[in-house]
Amino acid sequence: MKIHFLGTAAAEGFPNVFCRCESCVKARELGGKNIRTRSSAIIDDTIKFDYSPDSYMQALRDNLDYSLIEHMLVTHTHMDHFNALDLECRRIGIAHDLEHPMHIYGNDAVMAHTRSAIGRFEGERYKFHLLRPFETFYAGDAKVTPLLADHDKMETCLLYVVEKGGKKLLYGHDSGWFPEPTWAWLKDQELDCAILDCTHGYTGKSRDRNHMCIETVFEAQREFQANNILKPDGKIVVTHFSHNSKLLYEEFNDIFSPAGIITAYDGLILTI
Ligand SMILES: [Zn+2]
Ligand SMILES: [Zn+2]
Ligand SMILES: [Zn+2]
Picture (cartoon, rainbow, N blue to C red):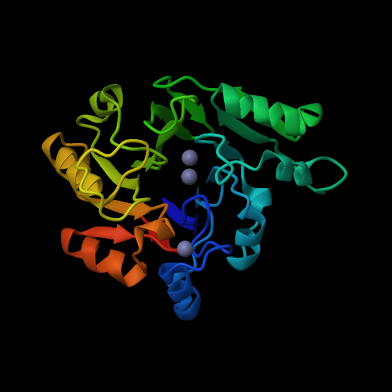
């Protein structure tokens, strides 16, 4: 399974283009892995997580062909994750020589956004699928289970476990410390890879709510080990970084790499 990280910032991007804080100024100066766009990832070029407002630019930057996308698993409707209006560019008359529909999956709020943006084009080019937490389904040959996040009390935000080609991936953000039913589902799953939220820097909270911080990521790693959630050689990858963390790529990498945790950056490709 190829996991391609398209965007690795929190909602405002890193740097935030409106911000003059020390971290944003440094990120602009240093460039490279410090330039982070809004969060998204794609697996095997065909299954995409979310459609951030930067998705168009990310395809150009990394030379991706989005016509290959068959399934889009949407986590929630916050503006950094789901820009449904942009998907109109795939409709008949605008995108040519496409044989397959794009299947869009998500909670009630995602379906409402999707239908208001492109509902009138549903059919040959788009199929919509309402999901409920913990109800497993197949997206082509991938077995997918949506899990409950702890992120926004006004929306049933989802995380995804995708099993494909004998590998298991958890797309685990946006979320704070997982709700108990999610931990119970994850027990003994022996994942090959878990992608976690590390929006904040150090907060002193080992079980942070709504988003994870550095201490919460380490606590999650302990929980993974204690409950056989990750294979012994499984990978943890952290992403969705905010400039309010006050930490740049090298600083996150220095904190996480001794624990075997990978710090994501835009354009990172991992094969599991
Ligand atoms: Zn977000
Ligand atoms: Zn800033
Ligand atoms: Zn969010």
